[in-house]
Length: 170
Ligand code: S3P
Image (cartoon, rainbow, N blue to C red; front, top):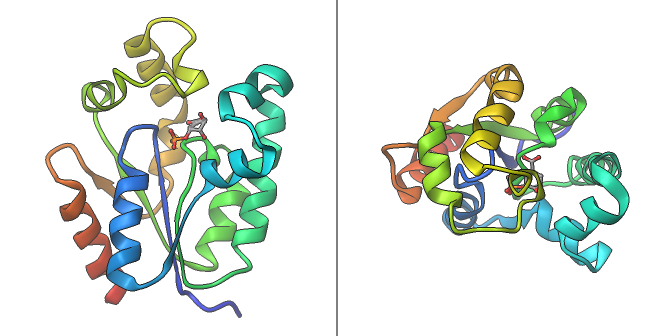
């Protein structure tokens, strides 16, 4: 039986996973890990280059392997990438290790947050607003399948972190 010491943050791109995770790590004294950053460091290239040279399926395999690795460890706050939810085993692996939460936001909130950014390959293929709507619609059921979803549109990152902290402390 694994100890439930991790906090794992799921959610669509631009829902604030990284910022909230960093605040939570400070509050709890746990180590903060950003899955995208770990993959980029190990691959020695940005995610956009991984998608371009090796394709999305290759990136999803990297994510899957990293979930396996991290779900064996304890006392981490983990910000997942927005697509980690695509593989149900990723969710169930993390559920065995601690509190799992999915940050949610309306498409217009997400658009406002990512409008000036260009590092997400899936949002660079055509009109950003359209891409957000389409990908959100395709993944809606997956995000909603996570037992605890937290709407972030009207909350600051500190407020979101506080809500998760309170749930974790029980
Ligand atoms: C992706 C989200 C990104 C990153 C990659 C793919 C997705 O992470 O993993 O660009 O499929 O939703 P963020 O959610 O941290 O932007």
